[in-house]
Amino acid sequence: MTFKSTFLAGLLLMLGACAAVPEGPTTTAQPTRLDATALLSELTRVASLSPEQRRRELAGLEGERRLDATRRFQLAALLEREDSVEALERSLTTLGAITDLNPRAQPLAELMKKSLKARIELKQQTTRMQELQDKLDQIKALEKSLQQRNIPDKTP
Image 1 (cartoon, rainbow, N blue to C red):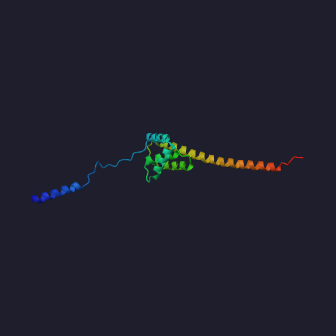
Image 2 (cartoon, rainbow, N blue to C red; image 1 turned 60 degrees about the horizontal axis):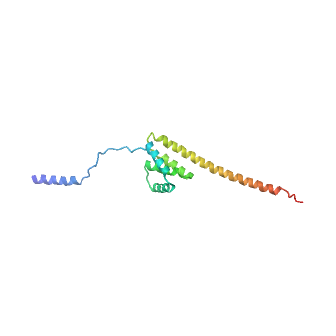
Image 3 (cartoon, one colour; image 1 turned 180 degrees about the vertical axis):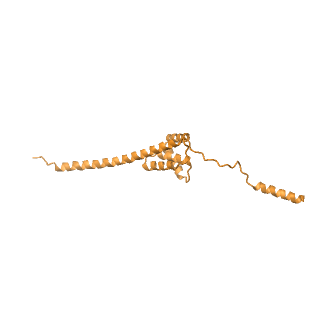
């Protein structure tokens, strides 16, 4: 009987050695939310980057498939520094996709959204104003050419 008990104990020890032991307590941890300090420091960091560094970081972030909230905010901050309306709209969309903001960081994100909307509107109005200015210049040139045609030659 001792042989069977010893054999069974040895078998259980070998099987126990093969089992994976959890490293820590298994609790469901809440994902960390972005706080206002982290957002402000990221905005400051992006503002201090050179245009080439911003382009490199932007290319790296655009290459990633899944972005967490921190990476999304980095992408939004980098896009905000671009000069095109498309980049500003993408930044606004990216900011809208961030859901896990700290309640104290929410006003900062809202201010950034308002700023982006205002900049988009300003760029669109500037483009429209330039188009209207070009049309006005064309009308003035046409008017001038018509006036020159209607002036009779007063040479004797």
